[in-house]
Image 1: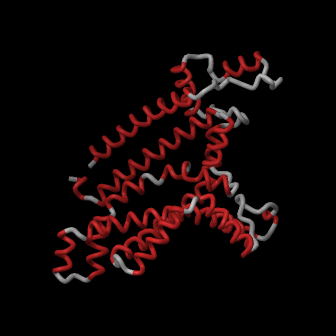
Image 2: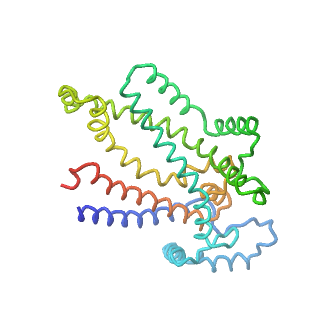
Image 3: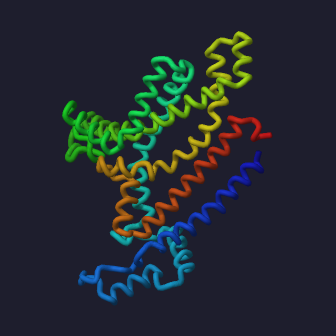
Length: 319
């Protein structure tokens, strides 16, 4: 078991090195140079541009730029070209803003998807199964931005509460119950929006996995032995149907960045996904590279957690 974990950890370290090199090269293959500026802007004289290139090691060969960048990143010296603030500090602040959205959306997705998918599989072809299938494909088909605007209109017109941003302007001077309720409203609607598509997709996947396992010989044998239906469905079938979801669970961590761009942009939520989008528009290369690196780390951390969970769910891995 320890050798399995050790090999997995070493593979992840090697992978993150290759990812860092590839992402660095892709950024520098984009049209234009980092020091390229608007010639009509009088602030950027040739002397300023040359000082900029030397300060950020852009006059060095590409491999040295790579070494300097990650050296500065791990020592906390990397700064944003847009506002000259520490990149790690900016990402950490935005990460803390995105974390509540991610946690609540993930909880809603995983706690609602399994009951819906399992019940659809048990009552296959029934009214519940057909209704769940219809609403699942409906939620998948509706564009996220369109559904977001519908939610905003309904909540604002029905409950007369603002939902944009993390809090209502000037609410910090009110009493703490008002502040808490305001934060809940601002957090709830984006989280629900982020969970709807996930519930629709994941519930369909749960249903298909349960139907596949329910058709196995050992499940039919358990039924023939006269075991209670709940024991057959939830102890024998569900446990084996969960194995593919271990991989999916490990891959939800990158959604903290990539899955929040649209939601944070629509709801004006100052999160890490929105920051990455703004950095791309501003060609803020230190922020872009750092976000790419953090995303790769989240992917590898998630897959490493999946490897460990496999040993818990599937005893054959331990053997």
